[in-house]
Image 1 (cartoon, rainbow, N blue to C red):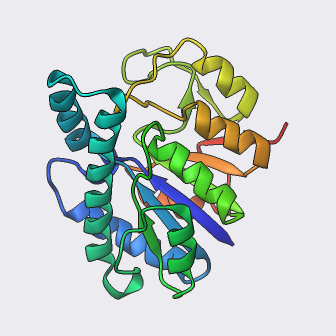
Image 2: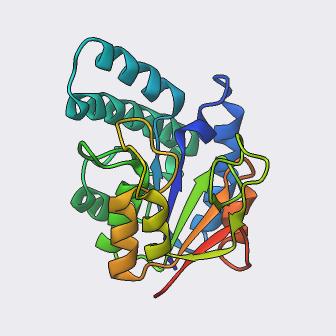
Length: 224
């Protein structure tokens, strides 16, 4: 299969611990052995910290996004370092470059692309651009919930959901740079129009990425 994996920055950057990168390397190499693989990484807390400083300095949301993009690309470089020869050595700045780099047979790792596109949006657009068979979103919880399970004990996880239903959940959300909790409007719109098979899993266990390729896990965004 041709697979795109998005990994939230909050998953990779935890207490400045390099070991999570090594755990992901083992899983990504195993997946790459059987599939064509692209990875998009987020910025995590470092991105949010820098964005907060930029916003405090009066920067526009577009400039705040640009700061966050730089951090995601730095995180991508770290994952490339961890992957060694298994990864293409450069971070693509756009989708055409990502596809070009994949012709090397190496795993491609990228961060953000342009303002107003979250990590999830980048992953969705990339999946559409390369005509991926599967998009896997590795986040910090078990799947998509009706509200934040870290704040509300009665939060309910969806085992299946349509893109339209996800749009309804987002209808009253205030989207700003660095504040994406789950798929934003752009990401959902891309998934809806291209009918990309998408699975949301808990990325704190990297093995869940492998499980998402052959068994029911997390939340599946189903065709409408």
